[in-house]
Amino acid sequence: MAKIKFTGARVEAFTCPAETKQAFMWDATAPCLGLRVVSSGAKAYVFQAKLNNQTIRMTIGSPSTWDIAGAQAEARRLKVLVDGGHDPRVQKAELVAEQAAKRDASRRAETHAKDAWDAYMAARKNRWSARSLLDHERLVDPGGRQKTRGRKKGEGETTLPGVLVSVLARPLREIDAEFVRKWLNGEAHRATVAMNAFVRLRAFLNWCAMRTEYKTEVNPDACASCVAKDELPKPAAKSDCLQREQLAPWFKQVREIQNPIASAYLQALLLTGARREEMAGLRWTDVNFKWGTMVLQDKVEANRTIPLTPYVSALLNALPRTNDWVFSSRGSASGRIQEPRKAHNNALDAAELPHVSIHGLRRSFGTLSEWVECPAGVVAQIMGHKPSAIAEKHYIRRPVDLLRMWHTKIEVWMLNQAGVVFQPIDTLLSA
Image 1 (cartoon, rainbow, N blue to C red):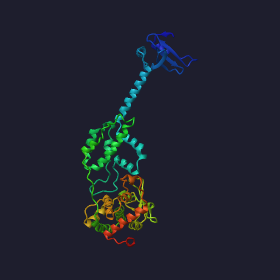
Image 2 (image 1 turned 90 degrees about the vertical axis):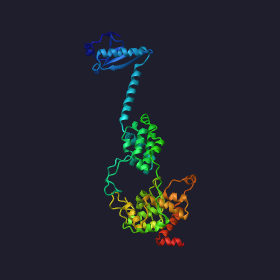
Image 3 (image 1 turned 120 degrees about the vertical axis):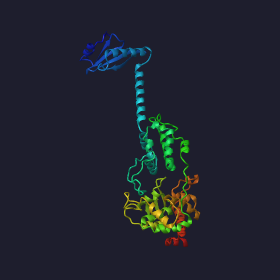
Image 4 (image 1 turned 90 degrees about the horizontal axis):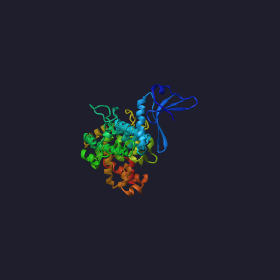
């Protein structure tokens, strides 16, 4: 093929013949350098050479960005590579991939871990229960919303940010063991909350370590078990619960609460061992007065069915049906009871009893049920605890009727200890 010396005028004047799609002009100065022009008029410097007896061609660039000297220098460099047995196209592809990887790494380094957390939530939410999903959402809740419960005079009226908000506001690569130590140290005043967040943060980082897009950014030892043990005090086990001799004054004062919904709610908690939100979230459609059952939205499972014992049935049946909620509230945005602690604490003070939390009523049910020698598995099934033995987990499935027999005995015993007179209970006792 004929070669001519490239000049600015020749490059500018070179055109594609009307009858062809493209045409080439080859430089006499630099080896393998050509100028290609297509029918549309677009031009580009190209490099063409033989490698392993095969013709290779690659584009250098447009004359509008490459001058002749620069294009010639690039052609000479590429010719050296070819003479050494290297394919410049492969080298270029590797360079492009390397640069793309660096850009991705830089982008990830600048991206907050919250973006990875959102991807983690989207990938895992279908494998979690509704309660577990809610727990994860609360950890990263930005806060700032109007409080619906727990307000005290002098306190702010907005919710605080979730415990992981400050952690996930950082680049993923910066969440290392040293940072986690400092974060846990700052949360030591609420060890149980911090440990719960730590466990979920560790699961999140383990998930990231298995993902191609995040694994190079994760510090694998950021949430080692020893980190939490070194920084957090061991959470003290709660022990507040009602004793047998305290049932009489407790029932007397709780039954005298002027708000019948709060009164029934507190009694139902003690007599069923349900969790606070399980009972507060009870709807009328969950209660079956005919067959004596009620369905609670379980924290562990999707839901569980427990007996509707006679006294609790009478309590619920006497409540007004103002909306879908059994324990309704006209003053709350949700339409159901939100904050029973004030009424409960006032009742405890009037009864001159030591402090018992709302969750302590659940603990009281589990403790007091031993007075009637109720099997531990029955109590666990009523309370919604996970089975603690192989037989309980895989073989024993107690029907509601069997649970009702023991649950009614527990209710009868509690009411007798409290001196509460209830006619259906008296009938059961004499039977």
